[in-house]
Image (cartoon, rainbow, N blue to C red; front, side, top):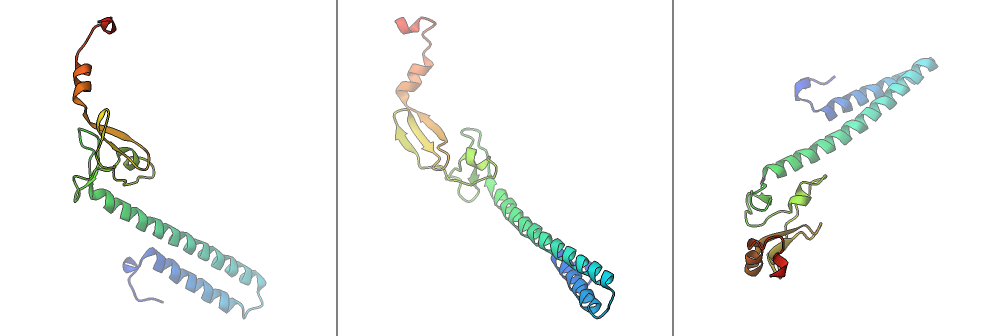
Length: 154
């Protein structure tokens, strides 16, 4: 029996101790002629091994979620202008809002600013999400002038 207080043990340690105890009981039962007892202890041992495997899976998943949560705490956003997210340590390297908000979330950097016919844009290399950061001056003037319902005739 362990002298470590239960509160200090991890779930994996508790289940491992339980598995060792069940294995010990199965080994002791091998010396008896009671087949019913042997069968019951064998089932118990198999069940404990199944629980141990599941606890290990959950422990691994928990570690992964903690890592993702720690990463999310390092990210700010979305900004009001373009909806970008970014790492606190890299405020001038925006993350793709579409990828970041997808399930599962991915921290993908937007591509560099690129001069195109429509203005200055950024593209996500993963999902092709596009953001126009600056509209070309000529297009801005054309968009801001209202020509009315028959403006195309002028």
